[in-house]
Image (cartoon, rainbow, N blue to C red; front, side, top):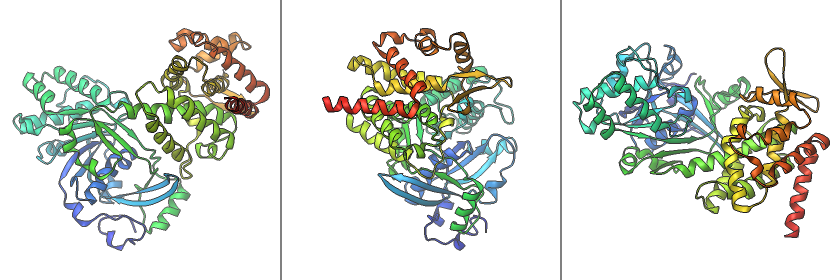
Length: 507
């Protein structure tokens, strides 16, 4: 039996949240660009939850921008199951939700006219997008194409059609929330829309309507939604549920959608009332800083340590006493107090607790090797501001951050192979490095293999800052690097933690 509206009554209700019949009659209030699991597992999750509580009372029309087939959604009446598994507040969570948030999926290449027709609906209030970082790019093209190729041009065509249909009414404006993982995503999208409007010569009156009647909102999304499980896990889940679902996906319990907006935006996005995971505020920078520093920053600094310790996944690292202790101390004593934003100790501690739960989630296979993707860029963006602020505030070397730097340098000890890849090796294990800075490291190692660590650390052009100004930092990292080389990563980490215990006892 496949999941569909017709089969809902035959699905056992125990252990499954089934949509109420009334939700299928709700008006279409949301136009969503993107069919991916993150949108289904976060924004659409919130909308579905609100609809079931009688709060938002609106469904989602999804635009599929690549390909023409929507059969997976059509055969299931756009219903899908979200299986939530993990740990929240230290307790295991297992929940199965059949979502009716999506009313239909339209392939832009096949039925562009239906998308423009939706722009004529007085019920439409919100546009949500997740078209990947590449999606928010300026492509100078006509919005008269059927359809335009780029996402911004598609959106502009919808807005321009709506403007004319409602004769420029101020009440016809929309809230547009970008969720792409780039800084100031909504602001950047608006800039592109305005540039495209000028390119298409749409006129000053339309530009004025764009500016005054529409709200382009920055937003931050934070939830791990790995998507469809592997074949064995999927078969077990479908046997448990009692039906087949080609759109089934997994998700962790943690959820956050922080949206930058005023009271007018909050009034439209009423689904925020259904779940504290939706935050609407005029300044959402604190949420970005907590995520980028405590979650992403901890991931980054720990990835080299865990991988070199032969630990494959994040959840397994939380079963290793040494690495778990490193993660907890790093977050609590070095990252939290050096976040370059006004964050209270209580806010940082509460967020750190959620990070520990998420790291320990037994249902998510998050590979450390995947986390090392673009390792160098992550060290510069996520870690350098923490390091510089810690030194400024405390005038001493953050030992755990320094150790993370040392593990990073050891991980990046690589060579260029004949097939064009960059490969590292540690204790008999080879691994591939995917990092735009790999050629730089290969060159540094070939030039001077003995002094490679200090050469990189003293390269102000590479770091865009002079690390030697952080008194003792370069020397500490090189010392830890040499310990990793001579004694091994586990013994070097043990020595770091023993020194910390001795220091704490002395204090």
